[in-house]
Length: 208
Image 1 (spheres, one colour):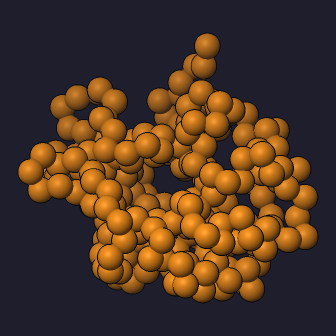
Image 2: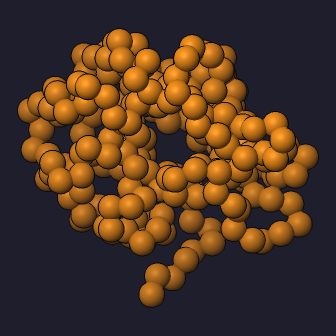
């Protein structure tokens, strides 16, 4: 059984190799070329649930590419020269976030790894006021109902394990952040974020 440390941070930096500025630019250019194969996530006004729609136009919010025609070739290109475990790389996609993103929990992802290729922003974690219950999945939260607990500015070209099961958002910037997102949720490798924190260093889940 995993012992959960309630003081554990919701994001930790991983000692994984950077892909470098040329690959970062390739990631950004590739997203711009294939973004119309992606999806846009946002909040429904009626019940604060998070909804997903086909990409129509690029505006404020989350846009993500998870499966697209050049996905396999894209992954081969960005990891060229690295010794990679190919079993799970199909779960790596591209995410573009534009302007401030309100507090929310993800629909399917409870833990993941982020690599920022372009853009600077604060990823902020929150907890609900007056309750210790775990937040629901796929829900947006009003500022008056939550308290900020942690704030991170991820460095370009570094990898971070993040806890998507907690309430989080993107703050303190105007612009665009483009990142690789490695969804660890349903791989059967880690039980939860806390388990991943303990085991990821020796897991060889991506770099061998």
